[in-house]
Amino acid sequence: MTVLVIVLAGVGSYFFRGVFIVALADRTPPSLVSKALRNVGPAVLSALVATDLWGPDAAAVGLPELVGLLGAGLAAWRTRNLIASVVVGMVLRSVLVALGF
Image (cartoon, rainbow, N blue to C red; front, side, top):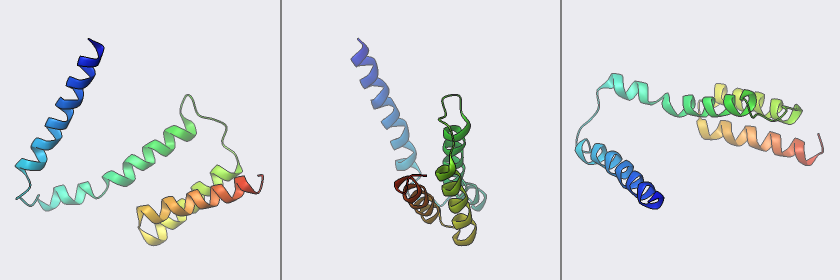
């Protein structure tokens, strides 16, 4: 029974996503919607990072995490590129962890 519920939830989720893609594939969204959708990726990433750093089950935040967060923030500010900011933050954190900080 549990497996059936999981499969039906997955099929329903896939169906609802597919309906919007198929129904709106040949239309251009209004400029206000397009403008708002540009902020979805950074907002979701910010929410995930904030929850990871300060949520109820968050591990202690050390120097590598803070330096990575600062580097990612600077990269995002300078480049306005989400991928570049993630890469810079992860590289800085990984290097500091590898060095033993």
